[in-house]
Image (cartoon, rainbow over all chains, first blue to last red; front, side):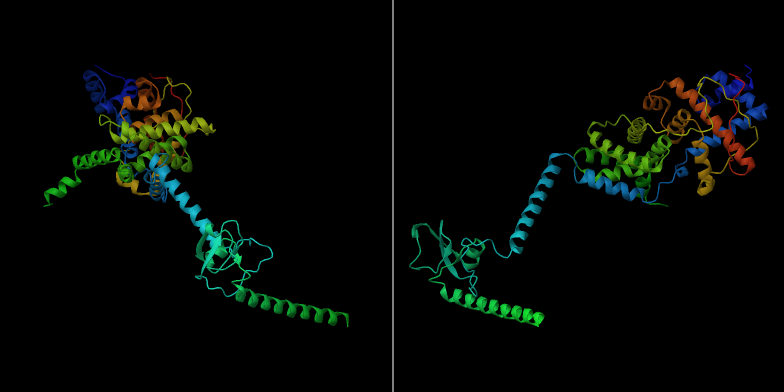
Length: 204
Length: 220
């Protein structure tokens, strides 16, 4: 069998794939031995396949592997859309919300007082045991004679009572209130004097 | 003489066994091993995506999405296919979908041949013998090769990439691209000959200068 150059070019890819009739293959081999041009095409095509098939042909962009690993860690290792993943996310959300609530409660100095006429007291030992009753506004020293609804009283510390908005009883916690009131009155008087002095100076 | 167990550890058989173990572990829920499983194929997966999208950032994004898809479907992976082939096919699908979705207008190369059944005549018959593969160590050479590949029309580039760069067989290439095996063979022949001409000209003129293809006189 004799093959032309055109037939060789048409079949050269199949020849390299070793995907052809043995008779045609022998004829092509014979042709290559005598045709310099077709031999150049054959060798060149082999070069192409070999060079492009080499793993070194393509470089990964800088940082590709690191980004891929991070991506898979985020989306595969720390699940994505599966129930353990959602569970972890939900627990994390609850923990964050609880922490925020707690932090807010600790940072807030005091809740609104239950009585607008009340004084917050001063120098009350925070761990002092006091009692409060449901629906009332005051906290008392246990045994205070003005406690109402004694059947509904509960015991807690002064700090807890304050945090819940209770204010000191005027009768049994007087010593803390008097001091506070006196100090506050003194402070206000000092401020007023300063203000009046400033106004006088400005007018003069 | 190397230790027998070292020889075994480095052998292709050992690598394959290790891969099978990794696949089984991931299928059983050891998701932290997934990256170790796919890491050896990063370069090939990236090359496949880049050949289709021709944009590095898009190719990287598609690789990441493809890996996630592979993970999602790994319970269905069966050993009758090579893992690498399966992974590359997923990547190619993702890249093709991305290209369809984005409808990016890609400037095609100089090697436009709308008629697939048309003919291509080799134009350079210079006797350039084997180029040593060490040449690939040079960045300039790799760049020239990449540029030559980018000059091919998309349909030739994709087939060439899958068959000659990703080493899928003709049937796998046809299935991945949704074309017949006959089309794969035709496109592969033309891609190889066009690249040969580009590289031959470059070899003679000083590293693969751009050379427009010449339509042939239909020798076949």
